[in-house]
Image (cartoon, rainbow, N blue to C red; front, side, top):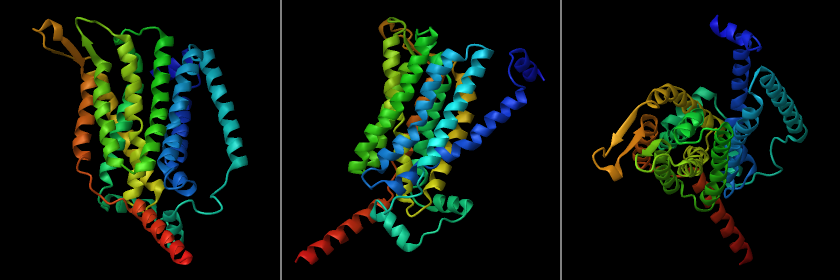
Length: 358
């Protein structure tokens, strides 16, 4: 085939082998990306879970940031690609070995009252498909799912077309593009940790997510906006990209925790699996639409010179996705079952202590 011949000419392995390798990486991903909520519930206290989930879930972005910096530098030809894949293989082997040497299934004692309650009840995780049916039957589950899908779709589309976004904004050298892409991915992690820490203290899932969605709508516009009087503004573009990472990235871990909270005592891995499947499926469907919209420019205020501007179609697409999500998210009104279980157990424990002292 044409692709096989292209791979041969480039000095790479047969195209079918490259596809097989990509599929195998895809098979491995769920073990890392679908387990953070379970990790948080098993190992962390109720006021640490959102931060733990944000760190574990969004640390995936560090790998992408490293790919921007190291991959962009190394993978410039067939020799560089082979060296890059070899480096990845060695790093994966080292991390895997370290994980095996340090792995523990669970802590000596449960870290939260809600986790203790699950153990005392003898909760058994049902088959996956049964879990999925129960999740969608639970009031409130679909709303954090929508927010998660919105966030992962926007960050994936922006990451996919980062070269085009930067070039049209006036940043054309590859190093500048790679640094901007790495900064965007790092901002996703930092935003998740900071905002996740606030949610841990307050449990204000809805107001925080609404604020993040509003900020996402604000920061996404400069990525495809051109003021005809000012021309390209690379500094504004980079600042908007970093702001988008800080605002949009935390939506995923916060709403992973919210979905687990409203469906307690559900299977945390099933919750995150549904969110990941939904998010990546919608992302895959949005990419060709965004690619088409990338070349569509819409001019506003043409007859008013100081306000004359144009906005790209892909940015309008992402803005619309965020706007629709925030309207739907505003309807959230489900009880936080796990938070209630933790609070009730804490109150009962305090009462017991007071009675004992009395």
